[in-house]
Amino acid sequence: MNPQAVVTGASSGIGLELAKVFADNGYDLVIAAEDDAIGTVGGELRGRGVQVDAVQADLSSYQGVEELVARIRASGRPVDALAVNAGVGVGGDFVRDTSVDDNLEIVNLNVTSAVHLTHRVLADMVDRKEGRVLFTSSIAATTPGPFQTVYAASKAFLASFGQGLREELKDTGVSVTTLMPGPTDTNFFDRAGMQDTKVAQSAKDDPAQVAREGFEALMKGRDHVVAGSVKNKAQALAGRVLPDPVKAKAHRRMSEPGSAES
Ligand SMILES: NC(=O)c1ccc[n+]([C@@H]2O[C@H](COP(=O)([O-])OP(=O)(O)OC[C@H]3O[C@@H](n4cnc5c(N)ncnc54)[C@H](OP(=O)(O)O)[C@@H]3O)[C@@H](O)[C@H]2O)c1
Image 1 (tube, rainbow, N blue to C red):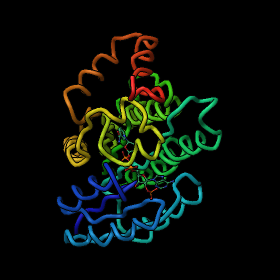
Image 2: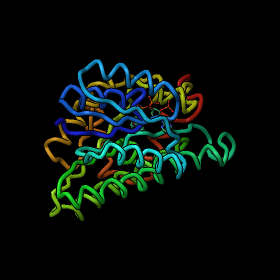
Image 3: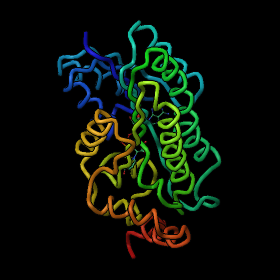
Image 4: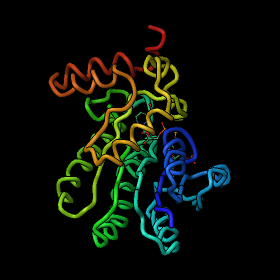
């Protein structure tokens, strides 16, 4: 029987490409996203010769995560790999441009649902002494993120969460890897309302390449991978030494509304 992978946010972008890589490596899939397009994506992925269960659930809600967990358990099969990838951002001035609800959705999806789903799935992995978990964080985790403040903080949470869990689990047979992409060519910037920013208009990485690098790092049991361009790797390295106020200023130049024009 094939191993099984669960991929959240698999209807587009990095998650869709992760699901394809898992399928091409012989994993049956449970994929999840909020909108009904996930059903169509499920059909396309089945064309790669694996079993796919497509779950439409709003993972920013407690109930949505429980629905996904119920579907995973209904398969009666263990989860060999979990990719906690679904995430959204919101651009703009925190006080004037974004609503409380926008920001709480980021926390609910990127942080709360990641903790919730990971706890449920890890319990079984630890019992079986086997499994792999991949968190899609971001190089945004390495810097304060003005005009994307809650988003960058949510990705810093995931990076810390992943590394902490990895150490806790080191003798359990379960391995945790954090994927840190830079700007990637997906729906992300459009959805975040950031098309007028320099970062949204800059060169971006191919989500298929990012997903491949994430998958390879996961299979090798690496703690993290900065995916994509050399520029991302340099930025992540610089992030280790530069003071936060300096990084925040640099980030501002890329993310401030209207910065695409300057
Ligand atoms: N693109 C970048 O530059 C970049 C860089 C670093 C990290 N990342 C991270 O990569 C991950 C994937 O993003 P992406 O760039 O591939 O963007 P994307 O194409 O917009 O994909 C986002 C995915 O998350 C799903 N999703 C959103 N809200 C959801 C909800 N409430 N419940 C369930 N699923 C939901 C979407 O499904 P629906 O359309 O059905 O809602 C979609 O499948 C995110 O965690 C993001 O933070 C992206």
